[in-house]
Image (cartoon, each protein chain N blue to C red):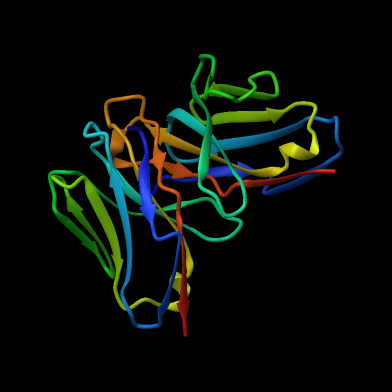
Amino acid sequence: GAVVSQHPSRVICKSGTSVKIECRSLDFQATTMFWYRQFPKQSLMLMATSNEGSKATYEQGVEKDKFLINHASLTLSTLTVTSAHPEDSSFYICSAIGDRGTGYGYTFGSGTRLTVV
Amino acid sequence: QQQVKQSPQSLIVQKGGISIINCAYENTAFDYFPWYQQFPGKGPALLIAIRPDVSEKKEGRFTISFNKSAKQFSLHIMDSQPGDSATYFCAAFIIQGAQKLVFGQGTRLTINP
């Protein structure tokens, strides 16, 4: 089946530094990748949609300069949290949808727990 | 109109019982309805999904019932087991559209042994 690998699973960083999270589709080409943020005991909140080779589309209220998304290839998307602050601490999850259409549905990564101290 | 409303927020079921989670939607353009299971600290995993041209889909102990006219769908977990304790999300999206998943609010299911 389709597998999406997300790395790292946990990261602690100091306030003011930047953190990069990687999302890779291992056995399929991901035409579109999505980045979500999840607060404790809440649903997933879509942050942005990225297509390979083009600029990401951000949801309303998401700061594009703070959350930099790069989708450099059909198997890799990265989310960089720039100048992180404690309020950026959250669970970040990526997902990908492949070129086989809805037969895959979405495949989610295992998530990254970001803690900014 | 883009919302998917899910209930209950939390559910406690005895081992061996039936767990039922309900969702409702407004946008009739939605044409794919997946359910996801999420364990703490993990990403959601696809459990089962249905298209609106089907009224029921069963996979093992998991069944989706779909009522197109009422714009409602539900997940039934038969013979619920402690290992089923997790958070469940219903979702919806438009296959030929932007393909953004619209999630329900989630249901925290606890199966008591």
